[in-house]
Image (cartoon, rainbow, N blue to C red; front, top):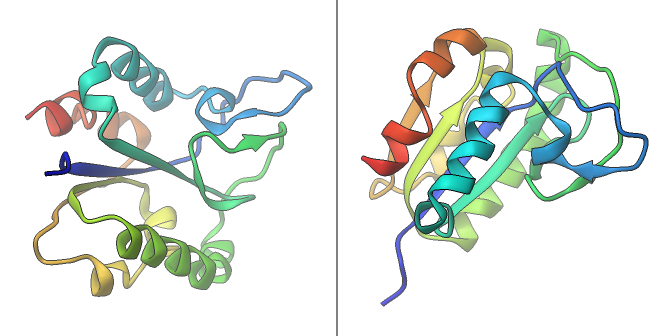
Amino acid sequence: MTQPRSFLLIACSQRKRTDTEPLPALERYDGPQFRVLRRFLRTHPHASASLDIAILSARFGIIPSSTLIPWYDQRLTPEQALLLRPKALTTLRQYFQNTPYTHCCLSLSRDYLRAIEGFEAFVPATCETAIIRGSQGARLSQSMIGNYFLG
């Protein structure tokens, strides 16, 4: 029997490491949620082994956290979110078609949620889904990593 898998989609952050060479997205983004997430992954390797992490980037769309990306400065506007939506939904659909997730957590602000409107259509009813909304501070205060994935 395979181990249950969880999926986390987190919005990119304005704060980024400025290293000149490309870095994995999880390391490039350096906002508070990413710091909490990296600490969680270091301190809970058993939980992180069954967790797929994707990042919704204003520049790159939905990417695996291991994707090497350069430094950039681009904010997601409501208009860009609508333009990004078809590609973002296609990518999310592929995640859910390829892996039978039991848990899904989305930590996104309003504009980032706009980029994935309609995702519910292809998330199986057997997948427990949590959408953590609001500002980055509000999402962080909900302890989206530890409380959600450690139960």
